[in-house]
View 1 (spheres, rainbow, N blue to C red):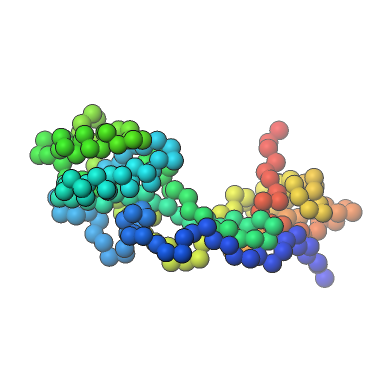
View 2 (tube, one colour):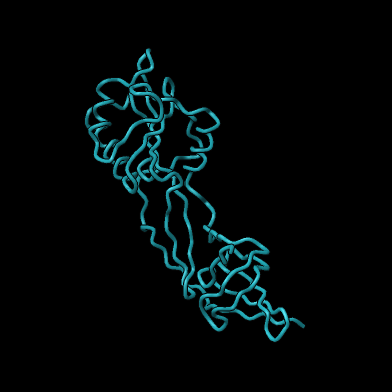
Length: 223
């Protein structure tokens, strides 16, 4: 009977997420029953500096509330996903942005397709903001299928996050840690829920399956 060698410890869950969540709009997520777009508004894509997405989102939401412009600007979203990593037997959950460098803004334009002047300056004077996708002063609205996907991505996930594995079955990998360090092997099976990869390693002329945590292996670059 074939034996499996496992190189890991029993996972201990350790989440980075705060115990309490703020308003879903602030967090870049929406409810399942919200409309695609509020009446008279469309969605637009705003380019922002890297790692400034949440700062821009929160600053704009605050400015719009203070200036009483909620009739011109609706939701402002930064969609995220929860990613679980496992290292040394410990599970860690973090949130990653799905669209790095972009913020999604629901907005009402003038009849000629331009951004209302007050809104234009309010947005442009915000630190970290670039331009809207489109021509100068006339942003291009997102297509409805793009809006649907973005809003779906923005819904708060209900399922337990799994590890995002970057390997494929049949791929050649190098083992970087553990008892089989510096061995090459072939990916035989993936276990995303555990963050594990089963690798076939040649030992004494025979193929032996070894279960490894994802971080313990790396891709072998093509020569």
